[in-house]
Length: 420
Image (cartoon, rainbow, N blue to C red; front, side, top):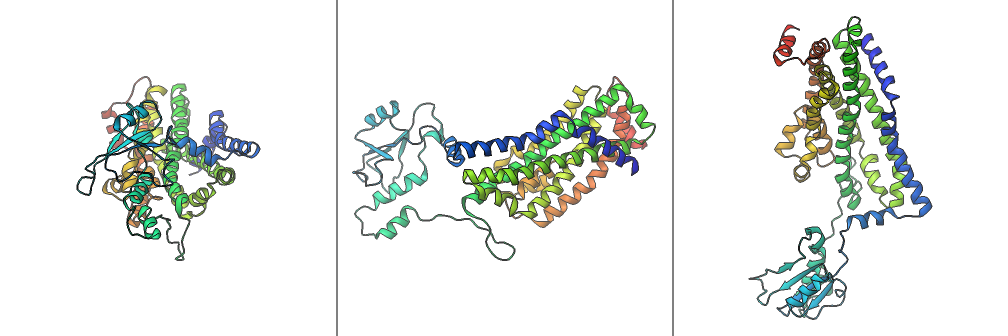
């Protein structure tokens, strides 16, 4: 253990001074601080700014409307700004070509409960998000006009046009309600990606240092001196634990900057509740996220160390390690499936596979009430995998480090594992 501690300390102190690590680690807080200062001096409302960035071009244009059924003519008060009536489809198409409207709706003469199909005409090459009218705009319009002349109270008419407004809350430990509404929904979407991307980014960066260091030591033959003093297991384990501490330092700085600087930025942007919901109100998630991050990092660091030793050059080692990085990021590629059903069969299976478990669980935890068996089982699998990975990695580590100008074959690697 003494050798492992000394090597881990050496690896941490050596890599924490790297210019790339310092720039990447402190670049996030500096960038956020710049936004806070900019918003303070320029009085910029980032909430409105981000809203304008997310709203497609042309979304403020009216929707053209051709009423061949006679049910929607004339327009009721309050809809003149959002809808523009045209007498014929040709007139509406001409306005669409001239970009006076963003889309054209044509209600046929046969429009009824038996035939409710309506034609939507858009400009050629236009995207769906730019041209398709929002349901929140169309449903009140149709409801209000179809009920015109009917003996319906204003209250019922308003409810039919806009029947509900969901305010999402979740039960706290004491039976009270935690933060809900739009802020919670945004937080539920941002936090999983934020946590998963953080894990993948730190694996790329800090494990890359391990891969680079091992490749350099192998090329310069310094490793021969090291292996004469310590075992390959202690050497690899020390490097892995040292870089795991480096990754935790990076994560701690990032989370601290989000809580301190980011909260000030979010207050300026009008979204301070998102930060509070994402971090301050989820201590259980922060604890489990730290556990999964640390366990996942140890697994991949051992793999990166073995890849660095097996490759004949740093470039070849990076190519071998690229496959591991792709596996680590793979849960991010099926985000649509995860958001739709975070407790589905595929997410649950991938949660027990050690190479995808850390990222998958980091994404699942904020999205739903994950079964306890998944949490406990995935942690147990990762805990068992780490010593196995270090054991296998140490054997390949020693074999690869002592072979120069050639990559060990699968038969040689299998023999090294059997003879250990």
